[in-house]
Picture 1 (spheres, rainbow, N blue to C red):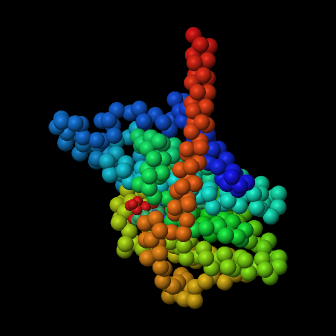
Picture 2 (picture 1 turned 120 degrees about the vertical axis):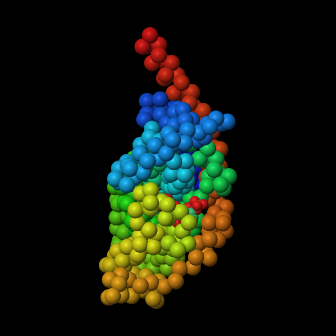
Picture 3 (picture 1 turned 180 degrees about the horizontal axis):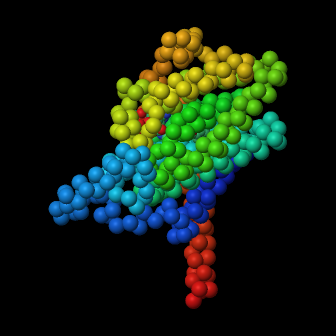
Length: 368
Ligand code: BYC
């Protein structure tokens, strides 16, 4: 096993331990309480029995009032089955993106060009594990176990962000991920801080603060390269040419082709549409690219005075759908690495569980 693969495996193990430990102390933690709630509260039909339609209509009306008033739904509140399902889908996919997102950058920890860059990158990759932790915890409040969510990821039933199926071929790619991928993530995630589901909204506040730092460190790394040699500047431009279009795809399909958008907006889960976020991102990035001294690889990119936005060229949606169908450049490798890290982490999970049980029985003895 090479040094890099060892590091990647170690990152996987760290993440596993982190997740498992937080679960084991879950009895003390509000995020796992809803796993214990009664099925009636999950809004599933009671098997065989007639559902109390009147009561459900009453609960639905109370839920609608909170949504209409732009309030917050909390884990113990009644919610429609479809609202719960949509949240589990989105939050778990988001969590998966965070932990799969550790892989392209983790791949460069051993090759960072200085101690300072290495330390920054290690801290950033650890932050991503933390984001996964908050998000899995938020999804657990909806009554879905982390094991189920991870199983869905590992068996290919759940998606993660398309962007992490692209390779990081040069050091400039690490800066590019920070500047553009984290930049796009912030653009998408800031509105999620106002999402109607309380635990998700609160998790996103801290995630966004950390993502802002990530974006700045990426931009800073690229600025340093742009002030270096011609070979370094060329490396940055070459990297930008590969990442620009896949980053624009991160915001999801066009609104006209986005099956989940209308309902997501109605429920206040999504606040700004895929296309509007993509446009905001492009508008904000053009000036940053100019300061950096790079050329965004789009000949159609130009300011439209009437729209007060930048026009941009066509996005290759066939490529996006290929990546979602598992045919991106790194889909197979990413999933295999993730599954292996999970398997290699089995002993860590067992050790953490045994340790937590020991601590709990010690506390019981002391309390007796
Ligand atoms: N990649 O109806 P739509 C990060 C799927 S992590 C893959 O518009 P929705 C970071 C979509 O799931 C970044 N799949 O869906 C981490 C749906 O399929 P299903 C992750 C995508 O949910 C480490 C179908 O296409 N951020 O930033 O209304 C290091 C139709 O789409 C993608 C989040 O997860 C995609 N790009 O909107 C650095 C944010 N786009 O599920 C950085 C939270 C769409 O029906 N998620 N699909 O089978 C969201 O905001 C929304 O879920 C999306 C999609 C905007 C992504």
